[in-house]
Length: 253
Image 1 (cartoon, rainbow, N blue to C red):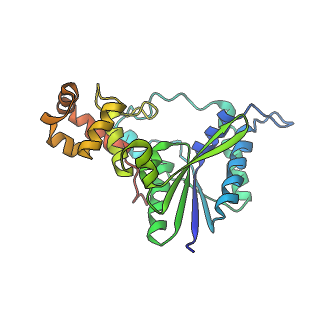
Image 2 (tube, rainbow, N blue to C red):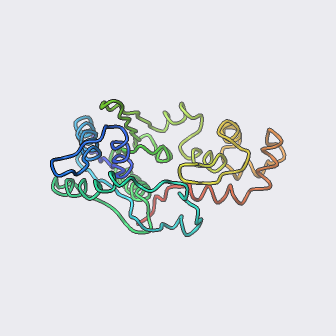
Image 3 (cartoon, one colour):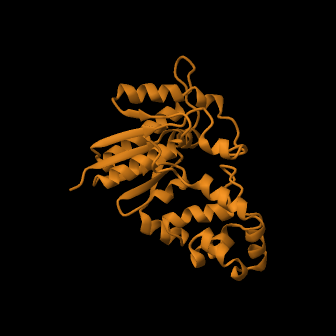
């Protein structure tokens, strides 16, 4: 049986835990609901997966290569709630005390670190489980890389699992095509522009037929409906930019 590595998207899971649980504080007034929820998810995953290796990746509060490429990247996001912000260093201290390795690097997002480590681990023959609340990571799914998306409701955690076949079944596109889907429809959470007037339904129809934005553009006159064809031709630069912004770097370090 192959060895297994679990890769956790730190801020994503902390954020899910924070908004999935009621506010909790300790005797000193420190907010603890995100830390408590994170550890609950962590122990659940460890019990289920029993991995040989475990790493948690965090974003760094600094511009990434995507911000330098597109200044408005993630520009619509609200600042992190102060009650959540004060729990970030706490969870890092807890993880270090548990002997769990933490990854973070200026200029890169946690997604890029996870994508790179997932690819390298798979190449070495490991089974990989990626834990994140961010569906952007579905593009990493393969037969040996499983994306696990926890949901915490009323104090209970449920997890959706996606291998490459599951992504196709749910979204009608392959993990690689999931990037092209985002390139057309955009992403309001990350402020990725996409192509104006092309929504999720139309984007899915185009990618299932042409499989990539490049092939769709090569057949732009045939793309339906006509407004999507027109938009693709007039805003091709936005489609290319959006695809680059949506693509997780798997050779980051």
